[in-house]
Image (cartoon, rainbow, N blue to C red; front, side, top):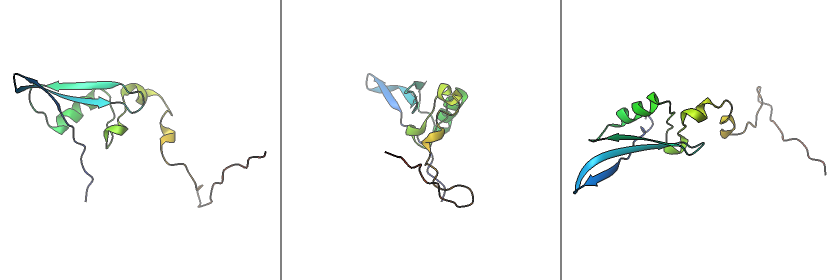
Length: 101
């Protein structure tokens, strides 16, 4: 079974009771920068993804994993976000260094 596709929830602005603007926002998980896509009618998820991709954003599987172009350009900034390595190549276990008091 394939994974669930990322979906965008619009923030709808109403004028006189009728929807007038559909706003989709991406927030960077590294620096909290935001970017917004506005449309005058409902937009599909692929269109919204394409807009942010064209502007240099990396959209994760959830909005908590989105990265802006500035954070993507910083080398090595997010390498340590994964799980820490506990095994070396060949299956040997990596032990933390001993601390002497």
